[in-house]
Image (cartoon, rainbow, N blue to C red):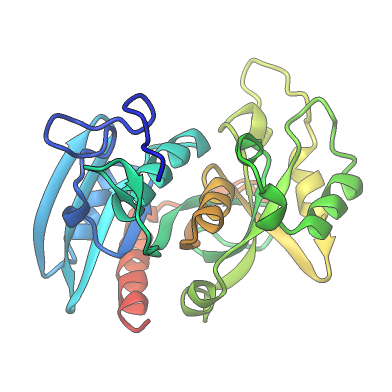
Length: 291
């Protein structure tokens, strides 16, 4: 069995993985991912107990129990580049022998649930609405740095999106990946379900104009107009496509649920998003316990 080099699998002096600063025994099978480091404390405030607290850069990790379920909450920071770091190190914690630097024979699958915020792309989706992401529509290009992409993306839907929107060839080639069906069913029941577009930035890539002119001024309209067999792109954020794609490549289950903080069409914004986020966190935890 090939040994993974020290420059590829970087470990801290205490044996923890480089960015997460976690050891295998400090990670639960059920993992909640949040972008905002400040949201980790909100999630763990619902735990019955907290056994692990770690912080390195913007990545904060708490592991504890909720109604008898062991669960970890980890902040990723913003963007698919951070998702790439966090997902690879989470997988290393459960599927690599860190001491021997080899791949374990027995594969372990994690439940990865992203809780976050997003912007609605259709009129009438009110701020504070919860959306469960059936698919991640990647506008970021992240997955093209890995082999075997065709095995995890929805190739037909991806081609329909590229042709239907006349996607410019100078931009990263889009890709579309589905959520884990079991997690989506558990987290989407009673909530709005739709496809989620993942942008590689907050301003230009999402059509926001401050001082710089954008390359695709009508990107929100392009996304909102796409319809595939009755499915539409409901919202915009910055992490889901890479989360879904990398999870499927690694054999993990992933699903994103977000609260709408702004409606890009109606130009409305939530004034109570912190209260809505608190309700969403507790709702997700209660649903995970029932899996």
